[in-house]
Image (cartoon, rainbow, N blue to C red; front, side, top):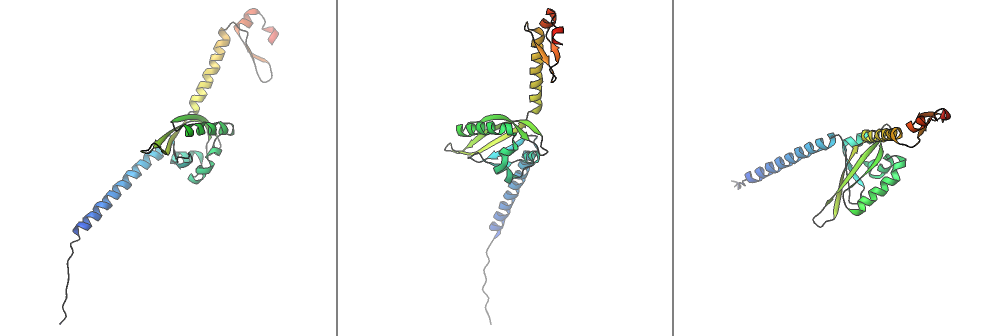
Length: 195
């Protein structure tokens, strides 16, 4: 006759621990998904860079706007800037990065279809317990409408000045024909001389 020897091991605690751990992982995943949804749907470009200032994350809005992939953004992001702004932007970003302080700059950014629009870029460093920068976080907000309004306001102020100043002021078109004459010129009777 053969004898059987057996043991029982209660694995209830291990099973409960495994279930609790899985539940915690699921909750973290749901939290990450909610955060990703918020970051990817806010109406501004959100980015993150390493301590060296090189981007390592762009939200979906930024990727969609620029038409860049994340891999392209890591090395090619300066090419997304208007050629007239690229050098100045890189100098200003280097100054912010070297200072280790929050900062901002304005530059034109190319949209996926080739149109350039003005953006306000703001960056804030994240530091570890020792004060070392571990990441840069930033946003890029479209300010094209604001820039156009400021330009229009500046032109209107110039026109208002031309109408109220005692200076002689005239404006010409591309063909060099006079298109606008200030009041002092008209009051002086010199209008015909400019036509």
